[in-house]
Length: 428
Image (cartoon, rainbow, N blue to C red; front, side, top):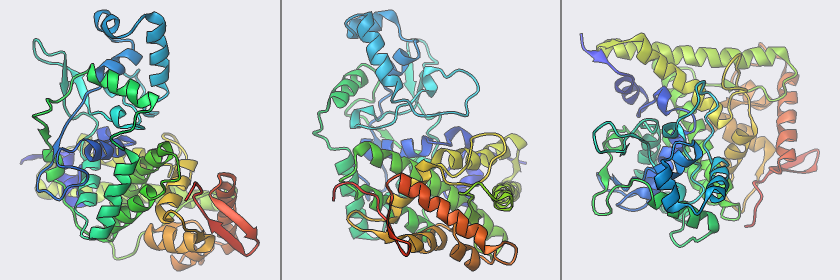
């Protein structure tokens, strides 16, 4: 019987490669890599895409103290300069809190706040005479699937607006101090030759379905990028967190659809005061992970033989990516669905286009429940049929606490007891 890998199963079930090594923030990083470095332009309609990959290995080795002294001395003025630049770069590191062992430079990535901070996976060369080679290690394909969903949008107006949003996020003529420093260090590392970009075969193998979940991602991304009045850093983080959140929602919904006709309803505990709601949020997480494991095992059996290790990679992708997007209370331990600030901010920016506001009640029902299938308030709980088992006042307190968090974060304007407007802020 043929051996089946996790990518074989997840491409069939969910559309892309959902592997634990490419979980967390990596899908969002991979998406931005493809958007910024695509030879054919921003979100092209071409059959194939080629990518200009840069390893940024000089900077990544510098902050992990693995940089050759001769290379360091050839670029940096002195030890004081080296320490100052290294400290600055450490502030830009991508968060990977679930790593037990000390990170090497190969697992050290930067948040892509500017165009020249965008970089690809790389590792130590495994052949004689090759110091660094560029290849996929953590950018496994979930972000490539998200990229395929965006660029194959059949709504031409939305596609053009998304393209314009990414162009405004990463303008080619930006010359900030950070961009100048990043471009200098990037040029000192390994890159694909300008005349020979790399064909991305993983993106080409992504299976775009044009269903309601992919429409959700397109709408949300377009809305986030429309907020030109917000700092670029905030928009970059929102795109990356929204990508993680959406992948989790789509994976869970598609797994459930295989086994049941019932619609998904993810219970989030925002108040932290009712043990019944906390248990429901814990049970919801456990049930969805079990469902993903079940459908993956069945699909693996149809294709051949899926090992327990490969099954574990699929299962772990869900939890790690949900935690990275702010949908879980923690990366490890006793976890449950909730909204941390990264999730709240991303969901608000994805729901509300620039220059508009949304009533809080509509945000809870029309956006969170109807489109994202997340139960945070009483109306969503009623529509999901949960008020037979729960006292409605529990969800009233839940939505009140969520409103308080949003208000404290500047994402909710309260005019009176009856008028609350969700507003991302920024300059219109």
